[in-house]
Length: 125
Image (cartoon, rainbow, N blue to C red):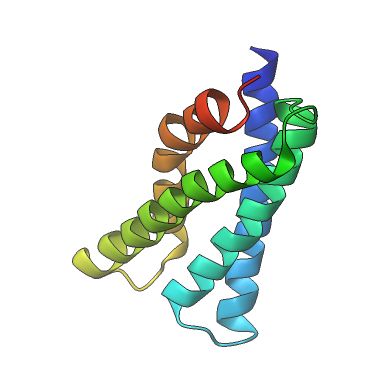
């Protein structure tokens, strides 16, 4: 249970940086929503890997390069799922605000995909 809680703290930290990056990209640098969302996902992914490896899953003893490659595969799936989900929710429903769809999609993808893939595939002992 402690691993799950630590992984959720890691995920929340990464998500906050993801959302902050997305907002800065959109409102400061005037990126399109999808590009800003993808950029935020990249930042969040890097942060989540580092926290996950070093603290949440305590997997420092594992081969960092191998873990990073596995994480990249899982993260790519997350990027595709999140970006596609945000696009579908905003465009199919005709929404102009992308923030709530991004929160919704991130939560839907978070535990069932990210947590279990990291625990069972990326950071296995």
